[in-house]
Image: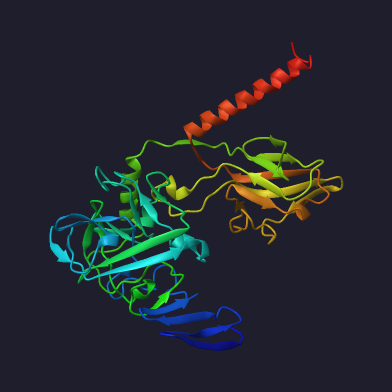
Length: 406
């Protein structure tokens, strides 16, 4: 872990104290009039606890994005306007007072794992007619009450009606009742905050505020409904939501392209699994561009949320001395590459092959392990077709001006 230096200072009513040193044992904390601040602290590990059923299930860090409206006694109340004592209507029709409201500003651009804090956007009507009434933004692990269970919002992602929205700055709110219950956010049943020691994520909590929280689930000590993030029950829910959307158009065409120093190189498709890139008279890193898809956004039973481009089985550099195979496990293959799977390796649709790997080569042979089924965007297809027609028209016109075409 390395050496640690203890630093302490007092400024007026504020006290700053903490430790800084080598390795990852870097902590800085400050005590202000309203509470303390702790920076660069990772709370609970991500994912479920080893025994998620022990103690009654799984706890989620549940947050509403600023602007979210909850059903109250006298109509909808925006979370930022809510105060302890305000009365909310639960999914069962009961009226319950608010115990506590937590607020938190998160700078996602400085967060080590922004995907754990970017909000999930649920479009109006994505779950059912009027559910929700307007777009609803929740933290990734916020439980949505469906089929008698709490399902984390991130488990419902489908890339169309339910997406994760990248934001630089996020203001989240927690709403706590005396006990865990189901609230109505934009008319959609979702869980209230369940305090299991995570108030320190919030600016108005009573402990040390974690500056870069991971809004992920930890052991739930008590809950009003079972939590599911896998299994047949989730498959049925996801399929039902997908059935509400127009059928996807799919294609096996990966549309492979190759760029070197921003110049597009000739790519020959020998068949669906084999391609050849002409490297002659080019230099620099090679970027392989292709269509990409997310399995979990196309298949209700899939939990694979990787963005998958092409599934590469082999890479061979053609030289005057013969072919030279590129090891897919080579650590130089980093940008745009998923983990090596021993016999093949997926790209994310924009993979880089370093120039050093292509040294002396006049061509690169690419063999795929299998073809993916990519989602076809009709609007994008139409635009690409119009662009291709325009380019062809201009090329024909140029040839006529040169007298090379009648």
